[in-house]
Image (tube, rainbow, N blue to C red; front, side):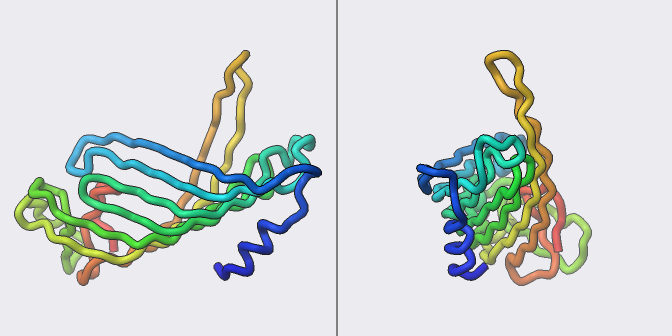
Amino acid sequence: MRPWMLLLLLSFPTPAGAQARPVLHQRLVGQLGPMGAEHALALGVRADLGDPDEPLFAGAHAEAGVVDYTSPIYSNNGLYLEVSPLAFLVLRGTLTATAVWPIGMPGAGYYGTQSPALPALDGEAGEAAHGFTATFSTILQMAVPLGPLRAIVWSELSLEHVRLGEMPFYYSARHDAVLA
């Protein structure tokens, strides 16, 4: 997306007195296997869109910033743009530089292959590789009031394009699958 498009999105009229503000999102995900855990950190600027007193537009926003996803065997660092035109819909695009490295454990590192079959995941065979990842996500969300608390219901569909290493297929520890 062009920088001028981001400026256009962030310049939409906002409710009286509303200002763009910094935001920080952080998530820690644990999993059995060589990657162990993933720490996600996003730092951005968020501007409200629409009237927050209208239920359909409460929480509508445009947001842009930098993002980092790091685990013991990979790191994805880059930019994101998020637009929520309605309270229940979020559209998000992310473009990151991707690096994978071995740590001597089975499944940890880059395992390239010529076929979509799962390669042998010997710890000594893992290699280092770099490339990029482009992701587009659509998120449907809602909040359900439960007394003094709110339950958040979230459904996400993501399309991801990855260019990593020299081979046409590789094992992705993040997805636990062979990807093209």
